[in-house]
Length: 338
Length: 106
Image (tube, rainbow over all chains, first blue to last red; front, side, top):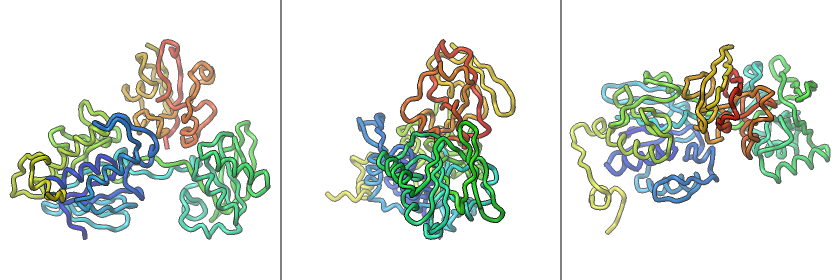
């Protein structure tokens, strides 16, 4: 059981800055995120793309912003629980008992949801029968590539994951790469490599095809793919892999009794608390009149939510407003040596 | 101002006056038309505002910018007439545009 003052759900820029604000006022926190690294949408959707509207930072990339925020919260030694999704919340007297998908448990005074538009989940095939093969002969990520040795694999997608796995698995498996158009979004060098392998007969590339259906009883035996013009091909496949990127799903948050409207959580603008006492929501996931989905708005919301958490974490103490420039206590927490 | 018609998956038709300068995505969101999620808010980063454009409009719309086709690879059941509605900026020329909203966005 991890006992801390506040649990932050989401390690995007808003969650990270909220951790900073909690640290400054002397509260401890831990952060849970479903992804394998901090940064949220900044890292997952646009690590290399520039951002121009962070106050006093004329230009930075999603990755730079994340790294700077991690640097900024370093003094507080915040513990991260990555690859974990919060599943269950239970009120336990004045505290919250929280459990994640991986069985990690927390005992906290308050919860800050900084979950963006939800947790990132793989996008799936639209063909219904795919569901029953998921995890047995159909995958959206690869944990153990040895199972594919000497098998027939049909990979769908046109991004880097699809291309990289097609290249890698073509060494030891019979690979079919199927993509809906001639163009690819993955790296140019990988596209060329795939085309070369196709010319050499080391993999089969099918463009302008999409999945039509999967055939098999307990495991997949073949897939039918359909060309833009309507022609259907059946290809033998022991395994099917789909790489269509990630989509954000609100997931278990829907079941926590929060007021939710259009995939966002309603909050007040005084301290960004939800309709449930002790649960706050900040960043893209919260809504209130005039809400802007900007990172800078998330920072403001995090600062106020952190102060809102104080009364739950330290009910007998009074929080005094201070500036980091002059506050001895804040500077000590930041580890500033004079 | 342009009249945009959204055909939703439940076989309902919504015809809305959308102001010039807004996107077809914003027209849907602001008028509570179901089926367009627009998770990223219009940044061409999520493919959850995917629509099918009525065939006769395909050539009249501004061409796809770099990146839109890449994002459409991720969309749910993309077709030749797929567009991201956040990339369709409304102008008088779009008056009468009809789009179909897919059964889901992901």
